[in-house]
Amino acid sequence: MKYHHKAFVRWDDLDAMGHVNNAKYLTFAQEARFEWSFAKNPIAAENNEFLKMVVARAEVDFKNPIFHGGTYVDVVLWVDSIGNSSFSMTYEVKGEDVLFARVKTVQVAVDESVAKSRPLKDEERAFLQQYLEENK
Image (cartoon, rainbow, N blue to C red; front, side):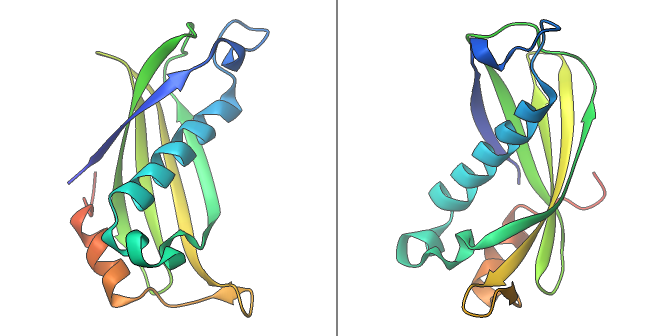
């Protein structure tokens, strides 16, 4: 299963080159990931431990520039793999018929009491498994 998020492109997201600044694509991914992990996760209603993760890696492949602010783009996300204490995700930032960027991130679950990674819990794995789309 994939999760779909609408991201608003603000006019001030455009840079001096007249297109959306490269850093904004990570913001689009972050907003989609937060909405997905909070709004769609039944665990979050009872316990916010799922949100206590850090991004350990992020990469962006820019495909086509976004030239207009004041509009929405679609951010589609899914889980690529699930490890012991981490998982990787892919996000596609799209327009109607155009792929603007593909973002990949790796999140690591963190135990804040010791500031170290922790194993994913069974209920977290179950939530992630719903969005697992291997080899995409």
